[in-house]
Amino acid sequence: MSNIGFIGVVNIERREKIYVYQEDKASYKKGDISKSAAGHMHVKFVNLSTGEVQNFGFESSYIEAFGDGQVVHHDSEAYIGKPDLISPFALDYENGNNAIKYWENLEEFPNDYNLFIDSCIDKVIESFRAANVKIGTGDGELVSSWNIPFFDAASKKDWQKKAKI
Image (cartoon, rainbow, N blue to C red; front, side, top):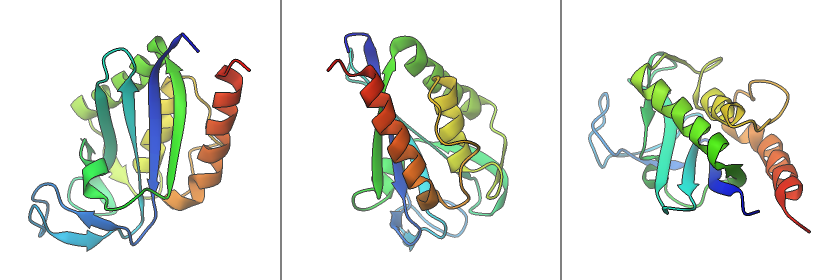
C-alpha cells in the first residue's frame, strides 16, 4: 500500500442527528442547536505525507430544499456524536488530489442545491468518481442513511483490492 497518498473518509449522519450551527444561517445563530431534518453526508481527506486534513460538505445556503448551494468545511464539528457510518477509502496521490480539486472547484463555482437531485449525497459520490472510486450504481439514494450499504460495500471492496495480503 506504499502508493496510498490519501485516506478519504465518508461520514453519514442520520436524520434527527443533533447539529450545532458553526455560523449564523437564516434564523439560526452560531451555537444554536437543532436536529438534522434529512440527515447528511460529508467527507474528509487525510494527506498521509503531510497529515493535513481537509473537510468538505455541501448544503443549502439558506436551509431550504432548493436554491443556492455552498461547500462547507465544518461538518465534523457541527454534528454531535459518532457518525452512523464512517467509510474509509485508500486513494493514491493523483486520485486524492482529483477529489479535493472537485470540491475546490465546486466551492469556487457552486451550483444550486436540490434535495432530490443535487444534494450532499450527490456531491460526495461525484467527488469519489473524480477519484476513480465507484460507489453504488447511480447518484445515490435520497436519504443519507439509505446509502450506508453502498458506501460500506464499496469501502470494503476498495480495501480488499488495495491491501497486500
